[in-house]
Image (cartoon, rainbow, N blue to C red; front, side, top):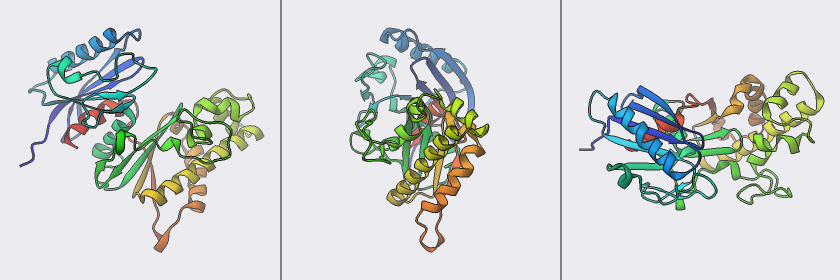
Length: 298
């Protein structure tokens, strides 16, 4: 008989904050949550901060905690015991054995994959067999739910959906060397270049669009058209039932979703009237921590 973890701790390790939850993984009920500063970037600081967060959450548990899940940036090892590859951030994270450090088993996964797991178990993808998620923020992340399970792929690289291309002729490679990627087309990091320096971030661009400024309107709708083309392409590749959108750009609400649906309706292949549903993410700030705990039962 399959044994399922019930009371669990989920940790989301970020560059500035550690978010932790104590959760009932059968129902998704968050029993307690806690935010701890990551520290000044030195590995000793954030490692201790994670341990202290877990200790504090354990004190809130009415019954023994049965598992710990941890989400972090980077690519995990094939057995999900550590982050195998994360250059440039959180020095000391690569190869760090969390189970040995904490003295109990820990499952580790990519932070975007954790966000997908939160939606798959308790949110916008609950009960769905085939789905995908895009997180639209500074860059564009993502994850794939295939046959009801997170698909990590070879070297755990699957789901980097922001690095599909919408313009192969672009001279602007993204961080993976992909020219004209979706991340390049809609990510906050490229707003300045896309708007000829007029706007510095997505918030300013959206404000300009809402005021009817011609340049903002052109840049905003072009980025959404590129998003729709990418989503239609991903629908062809993976045939999901539902696509979930999360991240800071979702604050645009109908100013994003209405034109996106218009463009998506133009580009999606719909044999026999089949159409993919677009939903906004249920979880935002706490998705990584909740998804890390949910991953214990995947």
